[in-house]
Length: 83
Image (cartoon, rainbow, N blue to C red; front, side, top):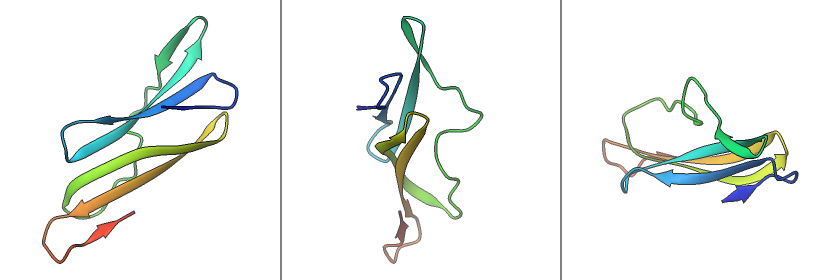
């Protein structure tokens, strides 16, 4: 789990099996934390036939900017992947 510098945000990777990991982000609202709701997952839409995808938080740049790493492995052999 990674906390923002102001302790109002935190993010953590959540694994859905061994082939998919997404990042969940929460924000302090009063005394509780609420999940950041977005139209899409916190990720970049990769072009191609993705077999495995891992999106993990790296660090908070500032309290409102989170640096993520996305690693995709594509189907089709030849060991193609992208970070």
